[in-house]
Image 1 (spheres, rainbow, N blue to C red):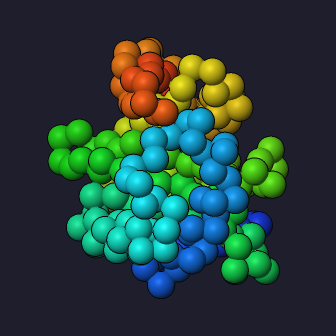
Image 2 (cartoon, rainbow, N blue to C red; image 1 turned 90 degrees about the horizontal axis):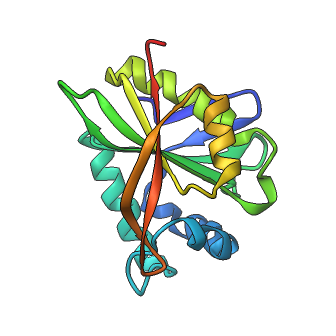
Image 3 (cartoon, rainbow, N blue to C red; image 1 turned 90 degrees about the vertical axis):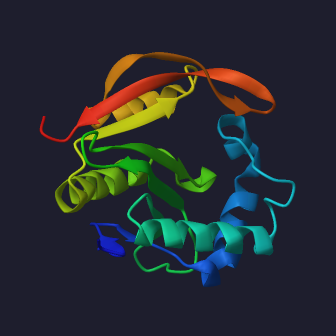
Length: 182
């Protein structure tokens, strides 16, 4: 599996725990936005030690091929994370599926960067890991995310009721899926 992928405008990298400061800066800069859509796990989420632990756990999971996360950087600016795309719950054989996640820095939305990153990583994951089905879970009111994922060819499959706890409340999520051979 490639630990770095270049696109026309971006560099996508797997990071290790030495990059915890950059990751924390990314989360702090976007805290108000991200907390509307994702759970915050642990009281110490916004600390360097926590981000080191998460990066180390993710790195070990990447080595086991159970997940993969790329951090997004603009070419020419290797010091500021502008987003991330992740592939979790990688299940093989039989299912050959994973869950896709993504988020962008507030100053870099609507620039096509997330679409560019997913357009580069989905085929790589399909080819290198043999993943056939890519699933995205999106809050029903997150219209920008729904629009982007549909542009990439994901199809709506239905509502998953009470799927994820966010801000202390169990919320429904829309299920979208992309099949690699379509």
